[in-house]
Structure formats: structure tokens, C-alpha cells
Image 1: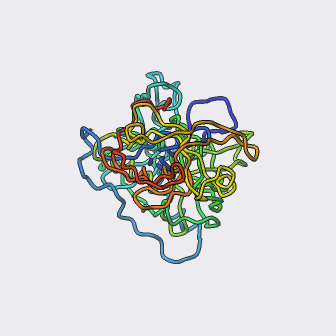
Image 2 (image 1 turned 180 degrees about the vertical axis):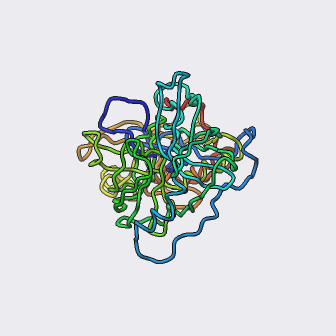
Image 3 (image 1 turned 90 degrees about the vertical axis):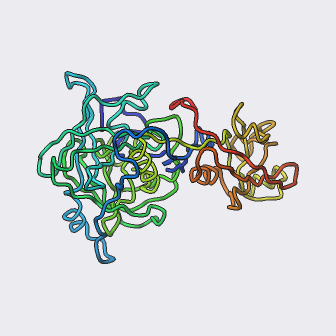
Length: 402
């Protein structure tokens, strides 16, 4: 992955979410300490940084035929499109990072992780590497430009000159269709061992994991038992048809070795970030300004709610769109079934008519919206349902202290 750092309970390993938005889950908004924090969503922003406004970045490669999982065939077909990323943060080249990435367009676009090519997560203000190089399967290495990065979803977009090397884009899949038990292949350069493949299955979906590059959590992360280790960051997670369904992001382990639990940022969230970066060089998110907790059937009975599922508003941030709409946060806390729960707050049961059954659902739904758009929140307050319309704002600039 990148610069050496103490091995903690969570060791950095392979690609993002922030998704989703779940990033919020975002590409996209997140959770802090088990709660949903301020909600953001990727959208258009300012100034074209030379990537080419509205320039297509999607790959033209076709999925592999057949329904079986043939990892040798996936490797043969996709490894030319998987690259190694070398990032240097000082002139002497002593402060460096190594990760992975993959080609997504014949125009030279390459996806990787933000933590490979920036110091996001290590500094209050994020700085890009001084120089970044892309290594190809044949051992050739070319210089690349950092188009932009999204610290929420831990996604970065690079670009190389199309004429600098033959480019073999890989096809992007649909992470919303990924199911537990499905076979997957992780490719990249673990511990600097370039052009490697590891196989496994999807262990779980819709996981909320701590972001490596912001104070938010990434929801909708894909959990896999395919070995993901240092240096895999930014590499692709392929499905059985050779389509990218995630960007390998990190591993949770007690030892720093590959026997931990691997996570990937869902490609749908990463694509939202990628498209914004290609068009504008940056990503912005919608903002609601609440923290929420899960309302479960047992807790609902205990608190006397007439609904069994939803998201309890634990707090409302001062000056936020939620505060302007007069949403109510909790009036107190208590311990129930071994956990601290909030009581007295509004319960969000739907957004724009879509049912909300958990805090993560709030994140996912807001992630699909843009700053300035209206969101119709169906809430339960005092035993009565009401609809509150909130005009979403734009995320505050703070990256690590939401």
C-alpha cells in the first residue's frame, strides 16, 4: 500500500468507501462510531481540470462469456488492464507509496485508491503526491497525471497519455447485483509483487467500514475472503464474467497478514466519483446534517413506537439543512439490551416515498441526490407521521472532522 505505518486492528490494504455513499455508502456519506453522520453525495462541481468535460471514461471491453468461474481465463483476459501505481511524496523519493489500479478508458483514465496517491487520512489537509507513475504488465512504466480524488470514497482518478503505452480497459460491472457467496478475483501488486491474482468469494455486502481517508465510514462495502494485502490498494475485484465490481480497499486484521477480512469499495459508488472527477476534477456531496441510529423491532416496542423499523435521529447539527427544517434530535439516552440508545428523536421511516429501515438507508438514499435538491422525509413524531421537506446543502469542507 503506502508508507510504512504501525499495524493497527485495521491494516490498510487494497483500494474505498466511503460506498456508498452508501461512501454515503459515495461514492459516496458515512457513519461515525456506529451512527450515520452528515450525509453527502457525489455531484458536479466547479472547474474542469483538463480531464475533458463530459468526456466518456467508461471502458468498451466486453464481459467474458459463460456462467462458470474460470480464474485463469479472468487473469489472461484482464491482467493487461491492471497496473501498479508508484507515488512519490518528496523530491528524494524516500517518502513513497505503492498500490494498484486499473485502466477504464482508452483515453488514458485509470482508477485507484485516494490513499495511494495522496496523504489523505494522515494530514488535516490532503496533499497529492509530487509525482505518480503507472507500471504495466510488460514492465514498462509511464508518468501519470492525478485528475482528482475523492477522500470520502477513497477513490482517485489518474490519466496517462494514450500514446504512451497500449491501453487495455477492463469492463465495469454492477455492484448492486453482487451477492454473498459469489466467486471473485482480486488483482494487483500485493507487497510489490506485480501482476498477481487471488481468488475467493463475496463474504458479505452492505458492510459499514471505517474510511482510511476521512472521518466518515464507507457503507455498502463488499466483504471478501479473497486475500487482500498491502499493495493491493486500488486494484480491481472482478466477478465471474471479468467485470470490476469493487476497488480493493483494506483488510481488517489483528496481525497485518492476509488472514483478515478484506473489503472493497463498490464500483457503482466509485463510478459516481470517477465521472465527477473526469468532468470537474473534484467531487461534492449533498448534506443533511443528522446522526441516526437503527430502530429495530425490539427497541421500537421498548420505546413505544408504532413502527418497527426506521432511523432514529440522535442529533441534528447546528446550522444544517436538517436544523433549518426543524427536525428533532434525541432528548436523552439510555442503556437497552447492552447498548446505548437515543430516545425522543424523530424517526425517519421513508425518504421520497422509499422505505427507510436503518441508518444506512438514510445514507444510501441521500447519496443519490445532489446539493440543492429537495428531500421529502416521512418522520414519526409524537406518534404521528408527517412529511418534512428538506433542501439539501453541500458538505462542509472538513475532511476528517465532520
